[in-house]
Image (cartoon, rainbow, N blue to C red; front, side):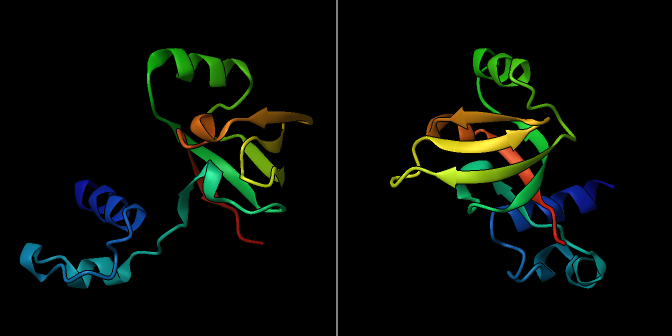
Length: 113
């Protein structure tokens, strides 16, 4: 289980294609089906995703949880402002605007259709 999380973290950091022979994990990593994990602010309009985690300080985490961004909830990016600040998302049937700094702290899994 530890190695699976480790490999997923490497995938999130963009290191999934690196040589993992140093750890003896190259064969193991080839068998995993990686999900596409990204930060919310990186998504384009029309993309659907599922919230995996909220990182950052506790005040920001409480704020985002209070707005309905809990683990496992599905969301859709509706539109971005010209400089991606703020961005509008649809979550739980309502529209929510988030600043770029807030959206950077939301880790999501892109839902492929």
